[in-house]
Length: 269
Image 1 (cartoon, helix red, strand yellow):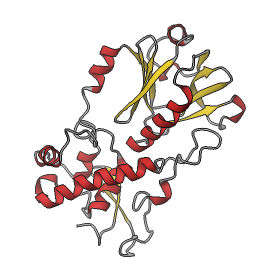
Image 2 (cartoon, one colour):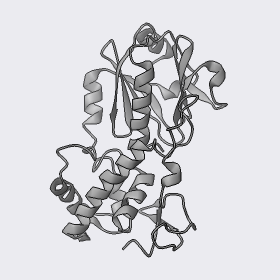
Image 3 (spheres, helix red, strand yellow):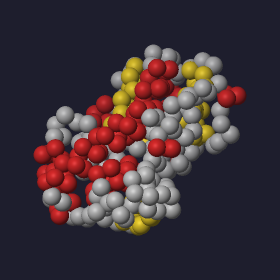
Image 4 (cartoon, helix red, strand yellow):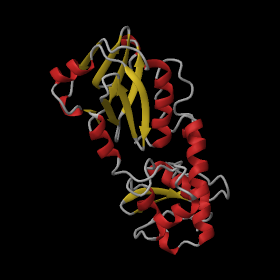
C-alpha cells in the first residue's frame, strides 16, 4: 500500500505535469471508486483545472479551480499512470482524467477511492488524522508523549493513522529496524533514549524513502527513473531470509498485532 513517501513522490511528479491543465474529458468504469454519479462527476470536472496538489498522510488532495477537491486514497493495490493512451500499462483502470492527449489513469482502485468533496468536507475528513511525521509541532517530546500513553505494540501504533499519519506496514518496519527496536516492543516500556532514537529514525527513513521515490516500482510515466527507487534499499521489509545488512543474520518475518512484520532478531531489541 502506498505510504507517505510514495504519495509525496506522486504529488511532486504530478504537480510538474498537470497543475493548470484543463480536464478535457473523464471516464469512470467502476462507479464504486467515486462518490457521486458519473454524470455529476463529468459535470464537476470537465472544463476545470487542478490548481494545486496537496498530500495529507496517505491521501492526495487535487484542488480544483472550482474550490472543490478530489481526495485520493489508493489503498492496497492502487497506483497511477500519466501519459498517452497507448503508453498505459495493461492494467484495469477504474477512473481516467483526460488532459488533451495525456491522461491520468487511476489503476487498481478496488479498495481505494477518488472522491469529490467541498473544502469543509475535506477539512472534517483530514482532522480525524494524527500529526504528520514532519509537522513542526511534532517535537521529540510531543512524539514521546503521544506514544507513552498508548497500549499495543510499536507496530500497531506506528501504522495507526490517528497516532501518526502516513506510516504503514513497510515504513513501520524500516523505522523500527533503523532505531534498533523490535516492532513488538510496547511504547510505554521504551526509555527516553529509545523514544528519541525512534523519532530520529522515523524522520531519517521517511526522508530517504521520499527522496528515493518510495518502494512501489511501477513508473508514473514513461521515462520515470525515480518512482520505486527505494525498493532495493529497504533493509527489512519483504526481505525474509535475506542477510541483515548490519550483522548478517537472516531477516525474520513475524506477525505483530495481526500484521506481517519483518525484523532482525539480533540487531533489534
